[in-house]
Length: 108
Image (cartoon, rainbow, N blue to C red; front, side):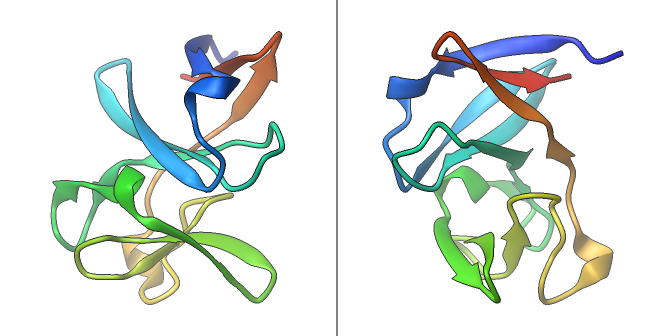
């Protein structure tokens, strides 16, 4: 059973952006693609650049799916499951996210 960890409040993340949260010692990139209370979380580690930078990436849409483009080498990772569009072998970890009473929580 997953433990839910509160990482921030909904209003702490501007729509259309991402932030980084430390969850059980791991950097997690948390994204709020629009003004709704829908959030996505993936590993913050870009496996191509080997840097924790994905939370600073650009949110984009490809074939009706939301992705984040790495700010360094531009590979895209699916927000819903961490798949890499350019190389499936480089996919990253994704996390479940829920919003409870305006608190954004990540399953750890």
